[in-house]
Image 1 (cartoon, rainbow, N blue to C red):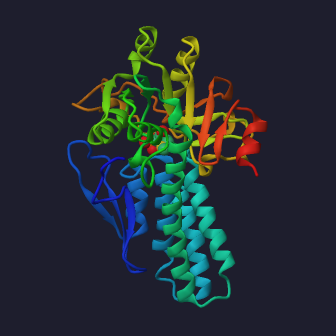
Image 2 (tube, protein in one colour):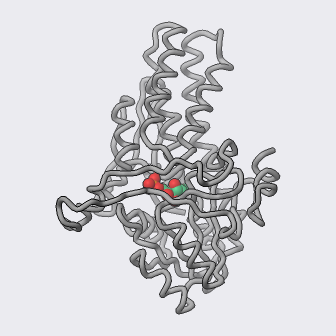
Image 3 (cartoon, rainbow, N blue to C red):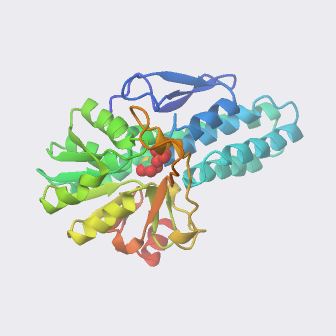
Length: 351
Ligand code: MRU
């Protein structure tokens, strides 16, 4: 398990007059700093610039953000109006990870069930709901680890992309949960962490987590995966996901699709690990998943200064979609989806 103690990836501190605390992931691995969000504007910025990131962690942040938005409501009407406003505002921070929208919808649905109760009760119940979103996410990650750990054999080489670990979730992770669990069970294997340009979540965050947990992790540049596969160093590829359509087509960090194609070409199984909150069954297939386009300067001004000439165009899609036919299986807290077909997705998730 990642040793992030004494701080969780993010959490609500105190009672209704409390605040959100989170590890500022933009500063890792150079600096470990915990920051506080007392208002929704600070939280929106933290999500936008990736101080908190990873689909499930963004969902937890959004649920807690809804509480920041309503806690000062003075009347019943005021509370419901504020809830609509804060949910619309937080929904505008990032478009791809469906967990954000899932969590905001969940908070709104909970508020509906509380209609007619005293104002103070509604506020307390919404705080309890946000805490439940966090705790349930942690439990789902444990279950994903249990469901998928058998895929990692002793002596295996496992490739992952971006960060789908404790930092991307309430705790423990999705793709990395399998690795933590296999490690806890005494299996020894090597993880290759794709650096994950342009924001380096693989080298900065995955390598940080796994090395702190005493695991064998080696960082590679994104363009090295094909060579390592051809050399027989990779037996398994596992990543997380940001939104999974009804077909099983899965959006994840840009570069995931290329890895899946490479894995197929080399006969290496490619798996996704994700909680049920990452599925969006209202989206028929991957072509309808909104892809976040981020600032060109994330490419132009990479680590160490100018990495492309000023004035040259850069294009910076943050996610891509891996078609279901390239995915060997999807590990969820409700069990394994295999083969990845519309029917199997419906059977495991749609009930
Ligand atoms: O832009 P990011 O860092 O939020 O992207 C994160 C990913 O793509 C993760 O792989 C995904 O959210 C799954 S996290 C369990």
